[in-house]
Image (tube, rainbow, N blue to C red; front, side, top):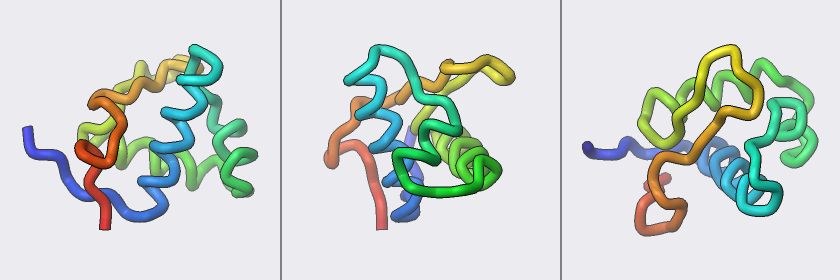
Length: 82
């Protein structure tokens, strides 16, 4: 599967998710992502999460908290952004 390019903000979100999972062993909530990235809108974070899922970078169980998983190994070799 060819990975689609990420926007700079999507890259920032997936990096935040991956770092959080590596540190805590569970995925962050939307509110935690907002706090970590100093954003105010969970709706905007939700849209970025949906785009990351659509592009194949993460998987998640809908309506299940802390179910976000990074699909491909997180590294600059795998994550494409522009």
